[in-house]
Length: 324
Image (cartoon, rainbow, N blue to C red):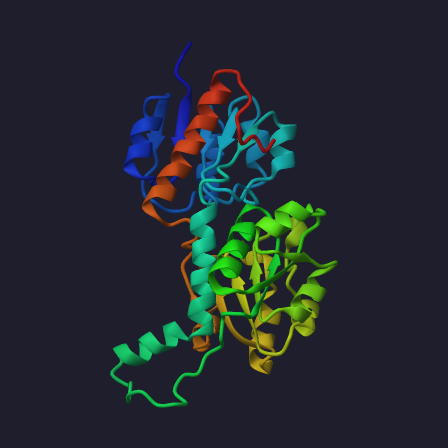
């Protein structure tokens, strides 16, 4: 049996590239940029396996063109809203992702964004680096207290639960959350003695901080909209380490302008990396460049997980992380 032709679309940690090289006839794409429409269309009739990342937006025309050639999209990343799962299924293309391995690091980053936004760490560093700090004074750069505050969570999956544990057991925060599934009492107890509320608006109304941990895609597109911002407690802080398209950015700017939001900590955006230039005018918004899983161990583990899924598929087994 001939070795499968594999395309790895982006630069991965070297140890994972060495491993995938043993699986088949691998093309390591260079440069390390997002795949273009034309590249995807060429790949559709060339490769048995494509290993994309969450930043590779796969065009609709790819799926019918790839039918009979591409057997699997073994994606590197937990989110898969860059893939039309229904179209992949209809054209005989399996889809896998890499959950679990990035849970802790993404939750760590969510707490980092929360703390940075609440305590104005970004603003303080910019002031200090610019030589504008005039010394300690009682009213200088007053932030928002984190310990004992209420954290609202939208999406109580692995990462939402991990964030809840950090917030509750580390900072004594009260946890309220919304999720479509009825979360069992033992899971709520283990993850910050959390309280499930009926709606996002109910969560927003009680929260000093609102952290987003829901998947992206059509079902959650602009889920956090003007209505949700309107329901928020005055002076809330928004944290988004999920997906940029979950937030209506126009409504976000309105909430910042009105003072409904006192600050935000963001790791993801619409149309990233083409950041809306309005963000740059808000000193009270912490802007991170999609760093949720960006630690050495986690990025390597993501690559190995993608390879394990691929190896299982090629062996005729069901991959552990089969999405479709």
